[in-house]
Image (cartoon, rainbow, N blue to C red; front, side, top):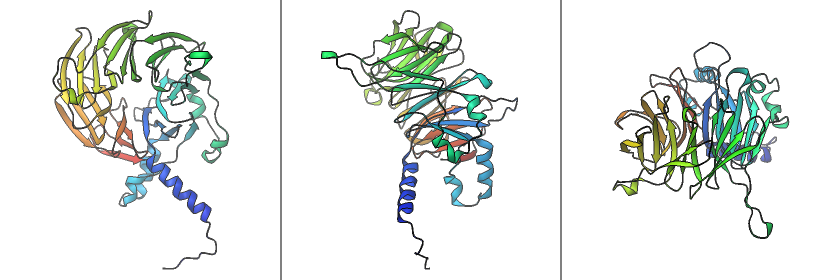
Length: 369
């Protein structure tokens, strides 16, 4: 078969190859379901934060409808979805996103490798009439832009701005919490943009953070192998959780990569290397430890069960005692994010820029990048 080379554009071809490789090596570090503006209980929009610094929103119904058009082809596993809207949120990877508030007044918060926390009005995303092809030149301005402090060294030198690896929120208290690369956690005031509290005590950088709002506390997970519970008023550490304490399975433990609280804020899931431990916080006691085949990279509670993903293409479900209930094959070969919609639909994001949307019954609704 011969082609017409008279209109060959080598530069365009080179650019397309580079773009394809960039997409295939991109990592989705976090997905979050958007708050619904109508009473429809079905999931409508998911937002993804990626290693290229972008924040993009996608219509699930649109992805599913496109999938129907080539249901019987190999392309169904490689659907390249067109985002409804995106912003280049950070210089460097965007590691986490959270919604602050509900409905039209919600803020979409993101953090990343540049040490910034940025916030956009969600209604500006949903009401945008700028075509996606033009949005790169008309970036939406954040309404909130916070930067981690730099540390002073000898002769007036300043340290690099430490990255933000995760964020948590306390809407009632008007606060945003960040887990930073300088081994500190920070509490910011949403209204003023001022730094309120610095939490110091870890000996290495932080991976994760959750807000225990009922007790006015936060919990952090660190590269130093511990999780710590902090009082938000004083900024003091009130408890150190060591998943490797009193165990002989030292090889299974490493940094505390991810943590999650249940709805009652009485139970804590803690991932450390190839171990998932469940803690009863009122009793300050570890209830169960489960060894996993691969490192767990994200975890969350679904009532009294735990969903976990990690360095293998599986979505695992455990009970509170650590017994495995189910395993579902997922698209990302290494998954960094699992998010649960109130309807029971789950989204798994990870390496390859892939997002796998799974129904409450375990079937795959759509997979896109």
